[in-house]
Amino acid sequence: MEFQVGRMEKGPRNAITDVPGVRVGHCTVDRDLHKTGVTVILPCEDDIYQQKMVAACHVLNGFGKTAGLMQVGELGTLETPIALTNTLNVGLVHDAMVEYMCQQAEKGGYTITTVNPLVCECNDSSLNDIRHRAVGEKEVFSAIESASADFRQGDVGAGKGMTCHDLKGGIGSSSRIIEIGEERFTLGVLTLCNHGSLSDLTIGGDPIGKRIEQQLNADTPDKGSCIMVVATDLPVTSRQLGRIIRRCSVGLARLGSYIGHGSGEVMVGFSTANRMPEMDCGMCTFRCIHEEQIDKAFRAAAEATEEAVLNAMIHADTVTGYSGKVRRSLKEFL
Image 1 (cartoon, rainbow, N blue to C red):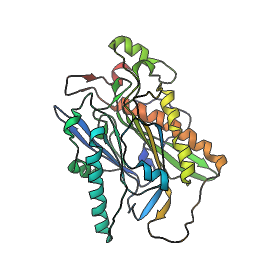
Image 2: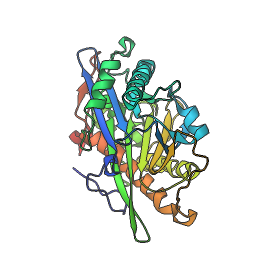
Image 3: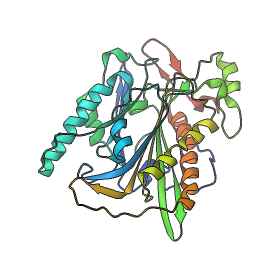
C-alpha cells in the first residue's frame, strides 16, 4: 500500500538504501516479555573510521538519551555505523559498537584509542519489559551481519515495540531524487517512529486520526520520540547538511505531530560524497552544492520523512505487549 507523498521522484527502492553503499540490518527480540530490538545503518562498505563522512545532527526536542551527538555536532563527521534501539539499551549497544569498531580496526591493521559510536533511542516500554535490557552485543553483531540494501520495515529491529500516533509504529524509510544540472543525487530517510497523538494523525490532509480515535476510544499525549536518519550522496558541507536535516520536522508536522514535551525528536544526517581521512593530510578538497540549490534538498528531506513515518505504520502489524496492551496496525483502518 502506497500513498502519494509530495511531488518529487522516488528512488528505485524508496528507501535510505537507494543511496549507494548504505545498508540496513535488524535484530528483533520478540518474546513474551520483550518486544524490542536493534537496527543498524551502515553508511558505506569500506572503512568509515579511516575515511569519515560529513555529518550533522539537530535536536528539535531533547527528551532523549542518544549517545554520540556531541562530537558529531562539534566535528561535523561520522566515523561509525548508526545504531537505533530502546532507551535503557543505549549503554549496552554503545559498548557493542565500540567492540565492533575495535575489531574492524584490528582487521584493518591499525589501533583505535578513541571512537564515537552514534546510538539513538526511543522508549518502547509500553510493549516491552524494558528493564531487562534484552539487546546486547550478540544482537548488535547480528544486525550488522544481516545488513543489506533490501531490508524490512515496520515492527522489526528497534521498531518492534514502538508506538506511533497511538497505533503501531516502528521502522520506516523513503527516498527522493534530486537533480542539479546534469547530475542526479539521492536523499533517503530512515525513521524510528514512537511519537504523536492519535487525534492529530493526518494523512494527505485527511484527519483520519479523529475517526480512528472514535473507534478505539483512546488517545494519549504526544510523547515517545522519533529518530530521523538522513543519508545522501549530495555533496554538501556539514553546515548545509544541518540545514537540510532540520526539514525532517516538516514531514512530522504534515502528519500531525506537535513535537510534545515528552517526545525526543533527533535528526542525524551524513553525506557519502565527501570523505574526511583520519590521517592528517594538511588540506582536504571537496565539492559542495551552491546554496541556491538547497531548496531541492529541503523538499526531499520533508517528503521522504513524511513517507517514511507512514511506511513504518503501514508495514507494521498489530502487536500485543508483555502487559497485554495492544497497538493496532494502521492497515486495519485504511
